[in-house]
Image (cartoon, rainbow, N blue to C red):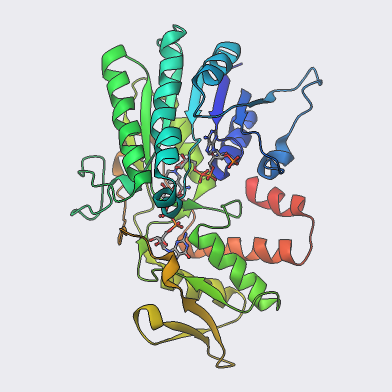
Length: 357
Ligand code: NDP
Ligand code: GDR
């Protein structure tokens, strides 16, 4: 049985990846942070009692800012594959916590690579790094592929740039099987509630049920290449199965504005949005009632914004055979439906069942 170690297992991608690998017969170890409140909701469905002799899913307390802890976990688990997904992953928050973001996202990646090297696992353990389309930032080229120059626009992106090049360097210097997945935005019903798609789908559900009055957003003009997380974690696994490590873009090749995503999400609950005003005065009005339900709040503007991301995943299609399946429109529909279920009080288990499987 292959052994995988996933940092960030309690996050959106960690949950989908753990389920994928368990389905493939792996023994899966996940690193989970200590928290004063419950932070394992996304993996509750796949939790296994460690006392069960058949158990193949194990959790370890850890943190990307703690080298000795990472060293010990890698030593104990002796993984064939490490998926380094843990990160302070919120771009806007990284402007508020730049030092922590650099520590966890940049130096954290270095710590994990060093653990592999110190323990003499360089020729055994394959490494996947969660790199990001945020690396392109102000890129002049559209669409962006593996050769497009990087221009990070946030402390988060700068930290991920350090991690990206460290992975490339460890591959070249020590012959490690280390790959960067340069993943464009991917979402799902498990997406964190403060990322824009989930914030919108939750608001559409809540407003339609009379549980919320207004949705406040920042830059409605930002355009993103949004795919489904379930399909992107499959690409991560594929990268680790290749004979040679390399870097790959995963994307859908379609870009959509935040404004359009809002319209689609509200259409799903039977509301048509009409836009009035401009800039920070722009409002989204319910066409049927004339009531304002979406407003711009400049507090959500970023000091430096990434206006447009559009990925070209040709290399991943040709080499890995990876392709996205779900369109952004279908994604919006699925997310709104799952949020409606949860808000109507269906057991959360049911919502997970549908989205993880
Ligand atoms: P999430 O924010 O949902 O999950 C991040 C995970 O990292 C959580 O498990 C979180 O723990 C954990 N984590 C955060 N800080 C630390 C730390 N200091 N030590 C240990 N664990 C930590 O992110 P996603 O699942 O969406 O993304 C996974 C990775 O992929 C991230 O590295 C992200 O930057 C990157 N990425 C994501 C994309 C996307 O569109 N989703 C696109 C490209 C890259 P906790 O649950 O306790 O908060
Ligand atoms: P992003 O995702 O920054 O691309 O990073 P996010 O959903 O936060 O923002 C996307 C775009 O929407 C605009 N926006 C808002 N964003 C948020 N969060 N909240 C708002 O109210 C809002 N209004 C408008 C943003 O300005 C931005 O342009 C995600 C994360 O998962 C990263 O970890 C990952 O690396 C990248 O995707 C690829």
